[in-house]
Length: 242
Image (cartoon, rainbow, N blue to C red; front, side):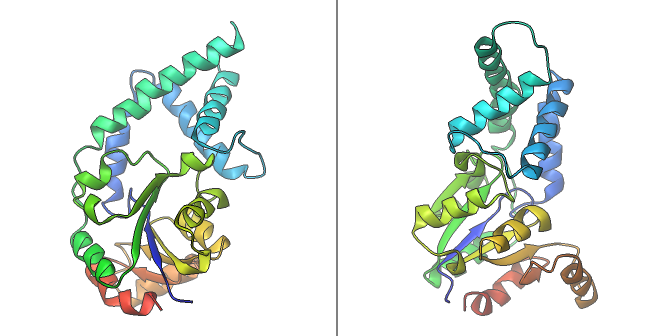
């Protein structure tokens, strides 16, 4: 079936992962302990996909997150007040911090050219990230070329849970087999997208030779295509869209 939508992960896919890690370091303050707990929650929710978020939307995700963080913290005080207070702390330390930190980004070379080539082919371009999208696409210089953008939290879950990928399909009214998902993580992106029936392309700057690509294919068989830069990605576009 022909590809109608190409959906990109953002962090580590459209710009280097080390930049993501460096900018995320800012959110370790003022409470490194809360930052570590926050990371533990995100690891927990990824590995417990049988547990449900209620309701299955961003509000439900944020409530589940705050409740989990409260449960491993102090048990004193009224539960609703503690959850509300925790939500405010998470907003200040993480989400507000990221809005500032990710307002300036430099994309990988040829990202915009690749997006323009996809638009010329009549393909819908989407973006799906585990972190809030906010101003990232504008900072990367591709906001005007992206038709749809969402944070996985809006589905109530994080990748590789099927819900974020199904959310994209439902919102764009396409079948999973009509979507090519592009990401930099085998576990979160390739496994998650292929599990729901999407085609997959792995962005890996280290796979710059055929030998290295072969090793990556063996390590990540869920990837249908592996490319090391966006010039190579553009060379593969005609084949990937069929």
